[in-house]
Amino acid sequence: MAISISVTVNGKTYNHEVEPRMLLVHYLRDVLRLTGTHVGCDTSGCGACTVVVNGRAVKSCTMLAAQADGAEITTIEGLASNGDLHPLQEGFREEHGLQCGFCTPGMIMTAWQILQDNPNPSEEEIRHGLEGNLCRCTGYQNIVKAIQYAAKKIG
Amino acid sequence: MKPPPFDYFAPQTLEEVLQLLEQYGDDAKVLAGGQSLIPTMNFRLAQPAVLIDLNGIRELADIQESDEEITVGAMTRQRMLEKSVIIREKTPLIFETIPHIAHVQIRNRGTVGGNLAHADPASELPAVMVTLNATFKLQSLKSERWVSASDFFQGMYMTALQPEEILTEVRIPVQAVTGLYGFEEVARRHGDYALAGVSVLVHLDENQNCEDVRITYFSVGEAPVPAHNAVQFLTGQPLEDEIISEAAELAANNDIDPHDDIHASAKYRRHLAKILTIRALQKAKNRNKPN
Ligand SMILES: Cc1cc2nc3c(=O)[nH]c(=O)nc-3n(C[C@H](O)[C@H](O)[C@H](O)COP(=O)(O)OP(=O)(O)OC[C@H]3O[C@@H](n4cnc5c(N)ncnc54)[C@H](O)[C@@H]3O)c2cc1C
Ligand code: FES
Ligand code: FES
Image (cartoon, rainbow over all chains, first blue to last red; front, top):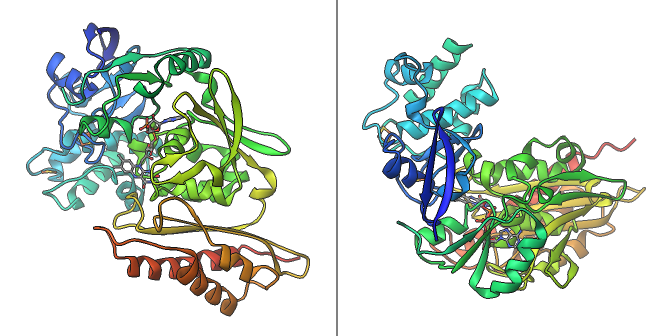
């Protein structure tokens, strides 16, 4: 069984035939070659695969590519504009918000949602907002600072 | 590819969903938020031959209120519940519970119906629905029936749903949302499934004595566990500290039968149940503003 889908990713529309069992994260990585979105656990646990679908941050490992038909998706590759880093990306660089970088795309897409819902989050709200994202390196402190940096810059 | 192959249908009407279920029965599974089903398929613990996606059925995704009840469609996202003014104002017990369910990305996808139908014994919402005396509408092509939350949950991941049925709607009676309430849980990390938890709802009579008490535990048994002994003890008594402690002791010793597992020992769960009951009843008590 093949399903025809039409998906807009980072402003560009793609049409493909996919197997029903193809996960959205594999569609992004293997078909569109957008490998910025990572896969950690495949079970909605770690947050590495977080992307924004129709304005909401979701885990792309537990959504089927077939379910993205008609959707608008933003991945980490879609944040920078005209070569300028998004304030969140800049914040992660300036505040050392990453070490190995594996969790970073998911962290940034989740942070995007946090700031979208609340442009001026408190430290506690940032930490609660990041509950669905695991980082094995940084201890989270600098990730929180990076998001505060971005909030200030955007704000 | 992670999950095994399956056929996928994305119907646009409830009628079509029910027809497909009638046709495929046990071979099919309905897909709601996918937050429990897709991980189990990725592990190949579940291998349905057919997946029927409910995400196109708009009529199942809303929250309404009338004089008698609040109605929540099965495909209402957990995040919608969290943001709903009706829920915040009319069922504050649910409002207080939602942030304990997983985390934002999961609540953005995960649905009320999926959470209830999945019937994880560690899940918060099933216990809260029992506390609120909610009823569930179960529909198949040939029938439609209402089942109380306490009859719906039958065991670990087991419910009253038949293979050709789906849960379409949850109704919460308005009288259940006016009482004093409390919700407490302990989880290793915020948003994880709880090691133990409790939801309580208390109505007082004109003499400030308990007249209608509901206490339901989660993660201490195979399904939501009502505290029959503690409720009987509390009825007719004032919500005072000593009485609350005694009720909690009674519930922890006689109402629940927790098991040991890798997350916690049965003994520790009993201890948690007692402490959490005290905290939840204290919260309920502190919400009382007699005039
Ligand atoms: C990391 C993680 C942490 C979590 N933590 C918690 C937590 O703390 N507390 C908690 O309660 N939950 C938790 N969950 C589970 C989450 O709430 C799920 O969203 C929920 O259990 C299932 O809802 P869903 O809409 O995603 O359903 P799905 O995963 O799509 O479906 C689950 C099951 O229910 C069936 N089903 C779905 N909808 C219906 C329906 N309308 N009628 C009949 N059957 C139906 C499906 O066929 C499937 O068998 C967690 C999940 C993850 C991945
Ligand atoms: S890979 Fe999706 S949450 Fe871990
Ligand atoms: S930077 Fe290594 S996992 Fe977060």
